[in-house]
Amino acid sequence: MRTCDACGAAGLAVFGDLGEIPVLCGVHWADAAEAAASPVGQMTLAVCPNCGYVRNVAFDPAVLVYDTTMDTNLHHSPAFQRFSAELCERLSRRYELRGKRILDIGCGQGEFLRELCHVSGATGHGFDAMYAGVTGPDPSGAVFHSGYAPRGAALPEFDMFTTRHWFEHLADPYEFLLDLRERAGDRVVHGYVEVPDAGYDLSTAGWEVIYPHVSYFDAYALTTIAERAGWTVEDSGTFFHGMFRYLELSANKPGSGASAALLTDRDRTLAAVSGFAQRHHEERGRWEQRIARLVAEGANPVMWGAGSRGVQFLTLADRTRQLAAVVDVNPRKWGRYLPVTAHRVETPDVLVRLQPKAVIITNPAYRPEIAAQLAALGVDAELLIA
Ligand SMILES: [Zn+2]
Image (cartoon, rainbow, N blue to C red; front, side, top):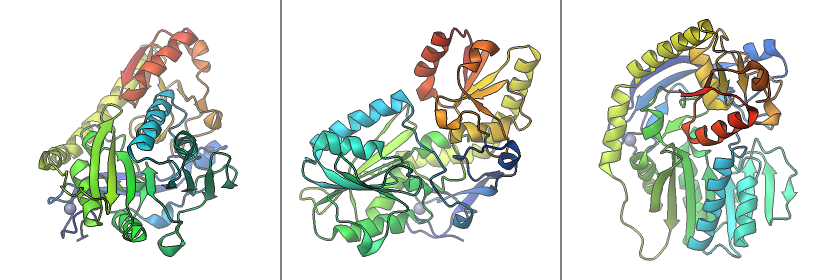
């Protein structure tokens, strides 16, 4: 039995088998046949009864290698951009980042680090295997690297590390935090970790349970893994309707020390886990039937949002491509095909012609902006949240 990455206890208990799901849910193919033949991986969820940490125990790092053709970027959404801007202001003030050195691990296309440096007057290094922009120094004060961040002494010195929506992708999250802690030595260093919140992901149907997400953390498990790696938790909270969780960390900071871990969070996760397999099975069936009914009624149902959450929904509930269209605001996806199901991604403009009566979205945080865009297109449709 596998040892728990978060608390180190022996024995994760399997509670959910989602079968084979797309591995490359952030990749969009130019060719439909290639998309249909894209790799799948086994998803077997297991939980630690001691701390509530959840992991895909069937995860195979060899089948998931990140490169610049992938795009898991959340920055195309105005709502996410707004949150990021507020976060830059807050971190800059709270940790007095002027003149400090930031390390952004899993920096995406550099949007966040660029803004953080700009707002705070800090400099920094950004690493991401999916980073497809210009590498090297950037006018913002950041230096970008296309590739995985090194471990050990090859990592640049830092006063604060940030990692947003990358920690849950790691096969060895504990070793990652331990390495950063060792790099900090006896200097005062801060950290910011942002992940999808397990309390949300595991209490819904499982559209958020995707192959690239190896780990699922609630506040308790995330605090547990950070403290075991030698970090002090300064603050934690959720945003985006509880979908995302952040943890602010410190090392060697005078006056910090008390644990923020709450057993109520762990117990909520353990309760969600116990009903997950049945809920997942029922939701899949319910959505297949609902789509079939909408098609039969001539409602031209479509899905808005071809992110990894959408890909997982389509894999589970629309394998036979009954939807009239899948649209997305990201131009990089237009005219390309989604993994395994091979749905073609269209620009939202096609909805003017299709005039769907039902638009499925998998992310409630985007509801207001999608509703506004539908209104602007002259589409009068019911928004269905999966
Ligand atoms: Zn544990």
